[in-house]
Image (tube, rainbow, N blue to C red; front, side, top):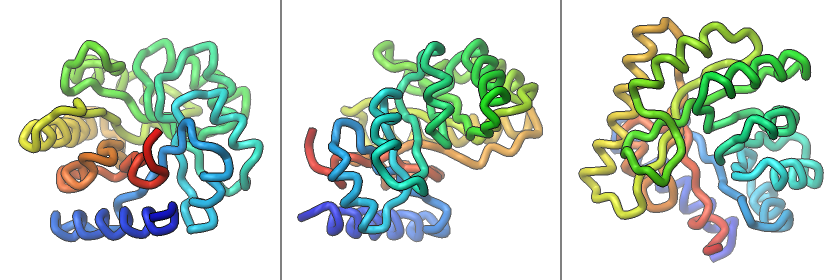
Length: 225
């Protein structure tokens, strides 16, 4: 199947998963992960109606954003280094991987200088994998306090990644844990944290069952890398 057909199938599966969980399908948004794929592939998805795209690297994101329509909503989903924060802010509407007080403060200062108001998600390493970026759930509380003090960025929610070999029960635990952490942080801080970025090609239906609002899907749309 081509990109158009793949998008249709993914959207249908997302809607079925949402209804099965008693949720409104409109509450779950698809971020098409276009990292490493050429501009032509992204344009094909755009023609098929997709408007949210996710990139891992700031340089690749900036290149593609300059070559594609201005109404695309870009999501930076990869690890963000402080020295690339300004370029990321110039392009991305959502930054999925804030993981330190220093980075949040830098983003807040630069966003003010640029006149930008990005949506920020904290990356939480729920699974505890040493190979993954993100902070532990307890550290998320300190970051939430810092974000509440920021004036130019908005903390919109949390993001996590599950191990590729996780069982179905482990996936439910990981994604459910992120939702419960979000709920606790909302109650403690008074902030609204509507977004849960979790779920990829192999596990997005379980993520939706556990409350995902943003699913990051690449391979099932664009094919293997």
